[in-house]
Image (cartoon, rainbow, N blue to C red):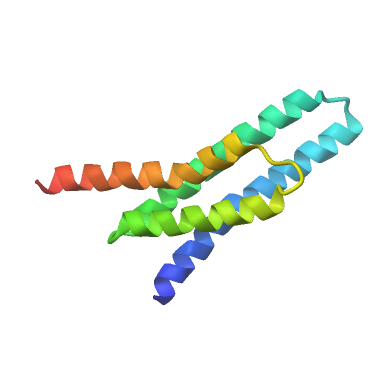
Length: 118
């Protein structure tokens, strides 16, 4: 149980820490340089998807058993945290797609592992 909670915390930190640092760098750049808001939004979304994909790969690699149920749990956690953070500026498409990344990668790895065992 302790190991599972540690994996959950590492996954959340693996996503949020680099994402916050990158967002801070973009905020500093937009303050000193005139960067288009569209470029900023696209950059932040692309980096968010990349970091989320990396953290989902880490998470599914660390959880060997009941991967789908753990992915559903982390998806709900991520959805609720994202909903609370982006309450004023909510984009439903990105909110659902980012939440489903864990499920899709977990499902893919579960299918791949079942084919390898057979």
